[in-house]
Image 1 (cartoon, rainbow, N blue to C red):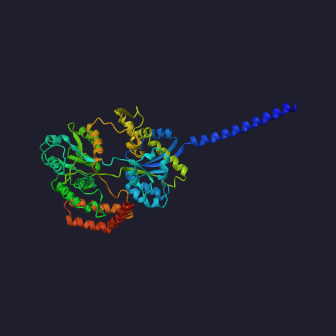
Image 2 (cartoon, rainbow, N blue to C red; image 1 turned 30 degrees about the vertical axis):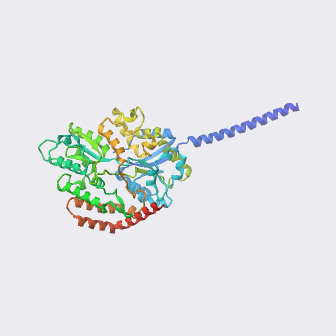
Image 3 (tube, rainbow, N blue to C red; image 1 turned 180 degrees about the vertical axis):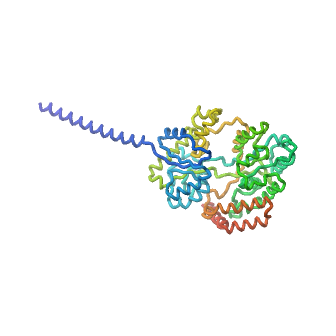
Length: 502
């Protein structure tokens, strides 16, 4: 009887122990499930390049794929800087927001004050983020430390879009040097390329920034924004090749080969002049050829456009201006992201976006719905193009890296000049002129770049229009120096020499 009671007590004890162990395990499992399955909330702010806030379809797909809950604030691009400054001032920043070059310069002191997370030490924990291009990452660093993730861009998309039908009508081939390009612009102005017997065409269309001219400056052999001379960094306009390009460009204005209202012409109006048959040459991003052609043939079905990149300078060499390898960056404020654990969760989201699966979803949408794969390229499904534009295209600022590092498809284009543009982007990589200040720091430039840039832009256009001569341009340079430019030269040179010593 005693043995029987003992066995009963032992059985009850074991049962109770097993029950308590099971409860403990269930509670632990429940807690783990809560930690792992609870969506991470991530707030973001991005610039919007389209009139309306995008459809939420892609946002929902990304949330499902990453177990996140996204709160994206969309700000019209032309109001983005103002909105960002307001949110900084009111301490209402989201977890992640987009920066451009100028805004990064403006935030450098805040970075140094410890207001943003240094993310460099964490990248090795994320196998996909760890594949980002080291040279491009270097260009985004502050004091040798990484605080941002970059959205990659081809190093040079610059080239010529021109009226091929006009060129053929006048017996002209694609120009290969500055003299041939000048002859094309002259002929497009003076030789009635559209055959209507009227003096109603010009050679080249330009707009309110110096981007078009600066391509000519680089083709002439000038540096890219800044250049090194005798161990000192100097702005491009202090080099003789820049002055040679100014004389070349001024002659376009003198002879009426360019729109004289360029200093106040918008990009939209600049492109319209090529599309409506006013101008025959446009210099800028060659990939713009497809939408420009689509609009042009709606006006005149006989329009033929082509793209070209190789223009030799006076010394017989071709050069093209390089960007630092990114279009924008994402940064992570500590006022919004309070813990390292939360930061890692957010980096995990972007790590997914750097997988082929994630990057294709972000950039192209759902295969079979938004795009199809043709010869290992992504092609937007034509009948669903409006849906793609509403649901997918606005989200591209979220992209991290570039096809070489994130594995996404590049685009398939039936329009041959657009496919050619991508080939010429790659070809440009062999002729790059880099801006040596891309990874350098100048507090004065960060504070006064807008004013300093305006002084020299105004002076350049005044020279082109004949309102000042070389002496007047020299006076503008002195004004630039006095407004802070001399200090910028000193700061960039000091940082440049310091980096070269390391």
